Length: 93
Image 1 (tube, one colour):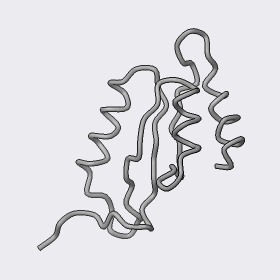
Image 2 (image 1 turned 90 degrees about the horizontal axis):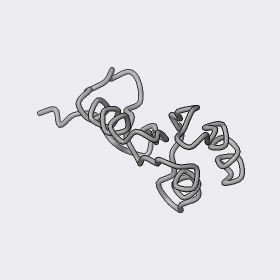
Image 3 (image 1 turned 30 degrees about the vertical axis):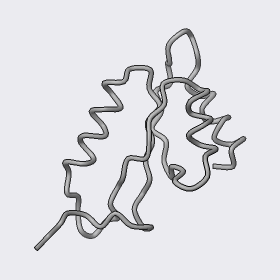
Image 4 (image 1 turned 90 degrees about the vertical axis):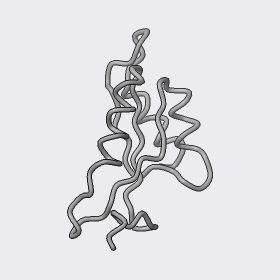
């Protein structure tokens, strides 16, 4: 019996930074619904952030840090999503 993709250490950990929560929810739903290609590593959703501060926390946490961050470049209130890249670098990601 197939229980879906193997969510193990080899899975690619993905986080989303977007000021519209519906975007992160849609991406999370798509990842969980898509069985994926058995020849490629599975992708698992590890979190979402709406602000640069939340992104910093997500990137700095111990344990389940994302391998990939899908980031909106134009966050609300004129915040540049590229600041998330700086936050990732500061967090050692």
